Length: 435
Image 1 (tube, rainbow, N blue to C red):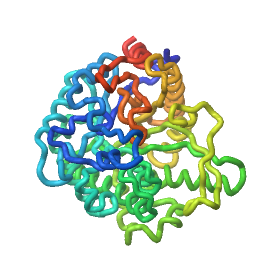
Image 2 (cartoon, rainbow, N blue to C red):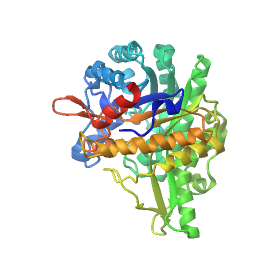
Image 3 (spheres, rainbow, N blue to C red):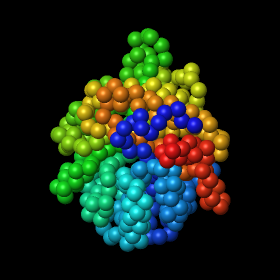
Image 4 (cartoon, rainbow, N blue to C red):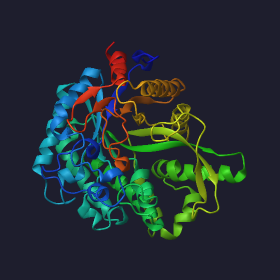
């Protein structure tokens, strides 16, 4: 079990997290199509072309899932709203069944004394908006702000925290340059525009919600600890390039109202005209910041790689079932870096966890959480204003391009029967949080 105590963290939020497309299912209840529906159904984008059509059936089984959170002793549930469930066409006519679902879900949390941490966008862009260019169309920033305002109007008074966007790096660079996630582009212009527009959408939403009186606004960034593959000048520059693409672009855009020059040197011909005029809006004041952390990466210089001239190199440490290097110290270092270089806002670890093939007695997952919680505690003891930590994930679920093969849950899900079975890691949290 864990080798730290709940009391070590003082006043602190212990939570678990999921995302709409990964767990909800319920796609016959008036929900519109999203980019993940078509991406998953196309070619070899996803293992066995698996989709989130049923997922964990959280749409129907949410009371059982909230009971699992409560019974484990968690304080909070981080979830996301599905944009196409609320607005099937992305704009315009509401889906009342979707509105009612989130009413039930949020009220169910409050009835169980769980704090609702709601994320407005976790990658499921309505397909009708993709038809109009999606994140490449500047108009998406206003569409998103309209959607954010609607969600706030319906649920804002019941949400503990609101995050605009989850992991904008994944929704832009990973999805529009590397092509790994929906919509699956591999295009430098698409990358440049999506990387800017997704932050501008965040800024537009924050401005709109401020006008409505919101005072609990944040964004969730995924950060990686990056190392050069060697001490050579070229490898050091390669690691800095990846750090700039992955971390500095989004942190710098939001908190310094500027993008890293080494990335701009590559993307400048493809950036929107006068993008600099948007930076003040992107940098609107926030109330908190969420950080998702999973791994460390090593990079070397590689002249054969177009544009950025960098290539990843496997690290020497133990790996997860996804091949991600387990490096708990990276969490301490990133939390301290964000607090010293970018912002003094309250921070939350909004995702942390691992894919583990051991489905029930998941001792590696217990070890992983033990190490990373202690890494977070070390940052807190060294002065970082860390307010909470959310395990990823409550449930085994749809792991995007990996389909259902990779399991992150502290609760096992049998996808044929939808039976939930708490794993050893769930019991470890239960012992920690309930004593």
